[in-house]
Image (cartoon, rainbow, N blue to C red; front, side):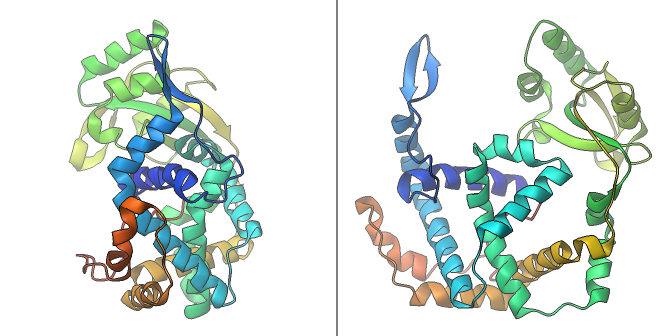
Amino acid sequence: MVKKAAFFLAVVVILGVMLVGCGNKQAGPPASVATVDGKSISGSTYYEYLNMAWGRQVLPMLVEQQVLLNWAEKEGVPVTEEQLDKQIAAMKRDGTYEDQIASVGGEQALKDRYRDIQARMNLGEKMYKFTDSELTTLYNNPSLHRRYVHGPRKRVVIIVSMDAKKIADAEKAIKGGMDFDAAAMKYSDSQFVMGGPAKTPVEKGQGPEGLQNAADETKLNEVSKPFAFVAGQQFGTLNAILKVLADEPKADLKFKDVKAEVKGIAAMQKAMSDPSFQKKLDAAKKKADIVIELPQYKYMVDSIKNPPPSAGMGMPQMRPAPK
């Protein structure tokens, strides 16, 4: 669901530039998005097809995001550029910034993607109270704790397959000049590249031994030899080859150093899981004066204000978790 959300929000960002500006100072389609035998496919054509394919799904999400931003402003907790800058700084600290930029096309687009998340954080912090004990428990959750406390590690991109021959073919293709990311998409098993080439930090003493050893033996910007590692009961032994993208220093951020960040994550999680939050957001949508200015979608106002019940019992759909 998270990977699907990331893809879908990437489409939101693209269409947002075309349909409502999204606050991007570089708004407007690129002159060309691809060439075929030297013939250009224009950016405007690309956006037209995105609009036709995804407009009905994207527009309600954009409207809901604006309702959410308006609600936060009315509650006295508006999303600020300073808050978004802190999100960007955290991504840079965590080593995910470049990957995120590549996925959405630029820093402004990345900020636009996180306005929705920040609004939920702001509203959640106002609506819910958290004790230091609750926040410390969240900070110590292994999945979050290694974001703040870890040894020196390497960020890698991996080609993964159950078939050793595919990895051997990938190694040959890369030695022949094929781009590593392109090889990852071609030779990885499909379940490992649903969100693009698989990228992850690798730290000594953490994770599969074969993966640790391959990363340790490979220098920055170099490609490892093929190796195998055990990925648990679900996948068993996997075959892989990796490229080291970055050497990341150790981190030792204490709870007091990141308490505000942890509180924002706690507020986000609570807002995403509390049905009453979605009910309040639905009420704000019903009350909002929504005017659709695209002629082909004018009919959507009522369905946006009165969406059918979802299987998630009020849970907001296709929203990314904080990175």
